[in-house]
Length: 175
Image (cartoon, rainbow, N blue to C red):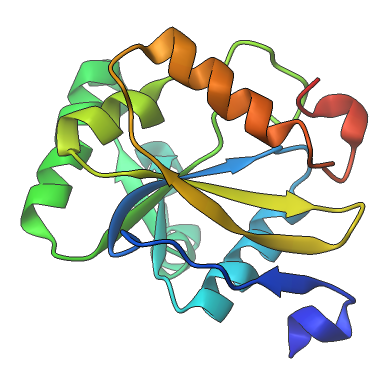
């Protein structure tokens, strides 16, 4: 109801594989993306988790971050350590949806971080393509993407999919 009051719609075409997945959300151009994205996931009934540097988990903010789905991550072990840690969480949980914003920033970034891709491969879970389109005021999850093993080709294809959507600040989004 809150989504509708604000003039937004949810695309309820929920693909298979939501119980265990990597959820990519793009374009990411504003802090508002978290608010609208979290609302959309509540509408879907999906308890989405996100990786947050462990240094942010101090009292009282740490409690709030965990309640919002934050998973504290020690980035000092390098990307392979983080990937293995989260892959282990997939092994331990029948339901787990971990969200990534591959730009890694709210500013334009042509070079996406690939952790979401490698995690999907390692955990053998699909990548779901979630989006917010501020121009049409619609959010949703489009479809599941299964990595082919060719990260360069697959990420190019995923970026091409996202070019149809406009972030809150389109000049900062996918071009």
